[in-house]
Image 1: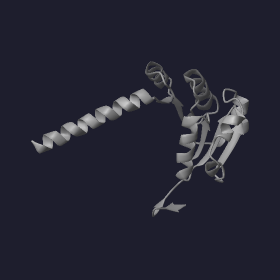
Image 2: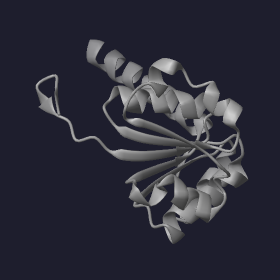
Image 3: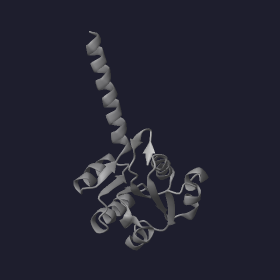
Length: 155
């Protein structure tokens, strides 16, 4: 597939959790030509995904409990390269990530974690974490570093 004069290699990605964060990630991944499965245990949550996203041929939805290995396998998780656990619960995300990484053997697994202390612990288990507190802190520190560099250049 060619886009903006670059060859794009779409990734096969699964998202567990179709809430606000999962839906936003889904939209962005689909916009970048990826093939995405989104899994949620609540059918009504899946219905809140915008039609413009669902009408894309690269999106598949699956209703089921993402903490159950058989549900993840029926959804086709084993055929994906990347898995994002994006539910509203840190413990559920860790459980899903452990199944994906250690049982189904997905090579790239990311877990959304609200608690920064737990995020550090999960990192020691080999699970990549996404933590909004750490992201905000890092962005602020990066901005301050950039400001300091710009100030030093002016002097």
